[in-house]
Length: 388
Image (cartoon, rainbow, N blue to C red; front, side, top):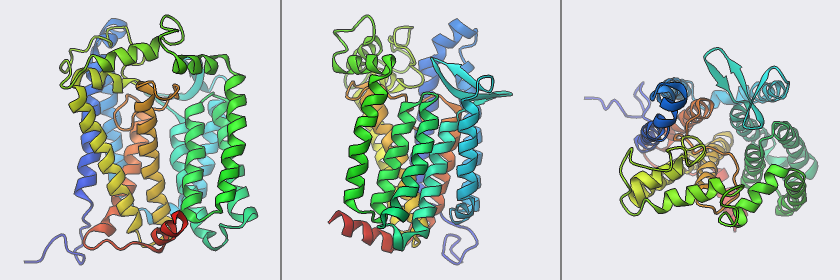
């Protein structure tokens, strides 16, 4: 009998480990969103299931986006690189227009549409990775040239960062610059250019922070949250108390105390704190393992893509997920200043969940190349040579 998963079969076999890790994170996130938001939703909205129901809708849309991405395949994204980037820029411009962009928490980051809100920065992250991957693959032989491989991409990144900072959205801006660094390094850009970019970014970041009172407050909260326990350090201090009270096994699902109007944004930016409080070190360890699996299998699929565009695309998507997860957890533990980046697949937020699940579908389409022997692409060899 013919093996339905053989290379000659009409069916394509995707990486089951990667798929299970992504679905595991989404499922875990749904449970924790309900646990972290039920009391707040009941008190403010009269429906304890309000946030869970909206997240379930987003998860359903995300599954659809994942299925479409797996069906369409990663290669077809190359022809959409420019339209996606243009759409992202248009959305970022629109969200900064009063009356179109919706303001919450002092930032204008959403475009309210019937039934849901769209966060353009989430679309921009994915569009930026697709465009960079395509552009760097097309210019592969000239990436080392300053005027071809470095300046145009840096200029476009500057435009996206400027539009994000107008909202303001410092976290997304940092992520966009980080992705530029990662993919330029992977493509073989000169290390001196990359170091220069970092050195140039540092004073700009300082000015952005020093010129903004609320960002300066975040720095104060990061440096000593307990000294500012009752003002700017309140959120970080409550987060640390939440994490510390979890111990090894946690207080139990639903039994966390900090979500009872003590910890702000418990179901969004600081959901990791509730996870640590209710599931303890065991739950946190499981979460880290799942992210580690996504990164491992994503990079594995990227290096086996066989084509430069696919390798860059997979590395970019894997880096987005890993970077956001690491930053979010570090912020909750007081190891980084508050950035406003969600915990991928877990935090409440429809735009983030749908886009990330669609991006995971792209990784899964790449993973079809890893079934059987892994064939490292030439780009993988280039990366090792650069690292050496």
